[in-house]
Length: 161
Image (cartoon, rainbow, N blue to C red):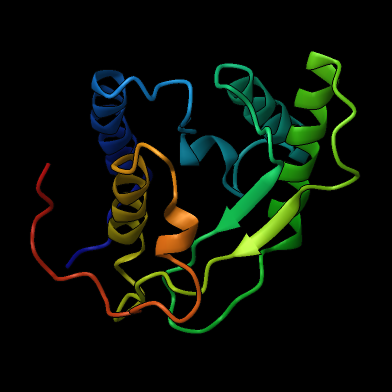
């Protein structure tokens, strides 16, 4: 498997958006171009603004819970910069809609995500997580990926719609 870049992920998100339209889930799930919010792009405030603007196009973070799905085999914690960007975006969103919101969003690391066998499959796993999430009209992916569930790697074969 070759490592894939952000452009491939964005093209895949566009395909998934068509699936969201056919299932009337467009307002439930939002996608963000990974290149626009990565550590190598823009300032922290600009990245938070981008996410806040994206949230305004969805039904919003009603529960203010952020899920961390990490396909790498070792348990990692969420990077503080990433947390800061997302937390700030949710605060900006709440301010825009005039809601008090929580003091800080709840962060949950879902330990039951399938683990990739090496360091080059990240893009594939991220795309698979996105697909698995939008296939559930009730968005119960937290149950699917909770700790103690099967953590076998995804099979190394093409994705089917």
